Length: 227
DNA sequence: GCGACAG
DNA sequence: ATCTTGTCGC
Figure (cartoon, rainbow, N blue to C red):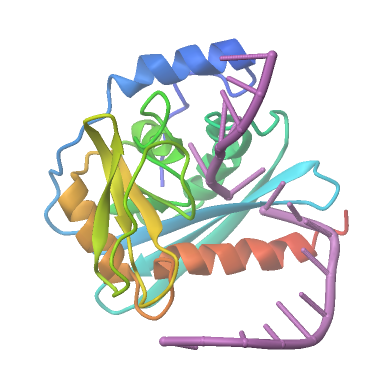
């Protein structure tokens, strides 16, 4: 699929990265336009053992048929350190490269990480959503910011993630008795729809199928990097 | 200054 | 994220 060149450089300093996030966070849309989300792309990343490369993977998933349509990986040199809140500048370029390899355009992107449940309301899901223009959801495995009460133990139960009085997302139980995930709006999305979509994609495991499969994909690709 | 801190 | 084996529990 065609993805325009990002409106900023990936090779930036820490201060520039923060300014970029502040600038583009203003463009995030918390409204869902598309009513039909048929093709869902799950995105994840891994790193080579020597820590030199970032390997991103994307799995295009038919939400109705529960089948993989396509899958691709892309690797990039790591040029940015891991700093909480600036994850995007570490994985972003590889993720976009992997998405460019898709033949079909996804209706939705689910990223491994936060959307607006972020210091500057611009986590990786929001960032990728803004660059691609595709609706996106952040589905993190742990908390970045915000407070919450533990959700009930049954699948489908959720508890709001708050930053003061601001609702940033939902701590959602996607499997009985299993640690919940952190769901937040990425872009062109509303929280209720995001929760429903994540639950729809969680068939048998904690993570949404497209994301879980992308995770496996990059784990395999990583082994082929002998460094 | 201290502690927290997506992947 | 990554380094790593077995093991307890729904």
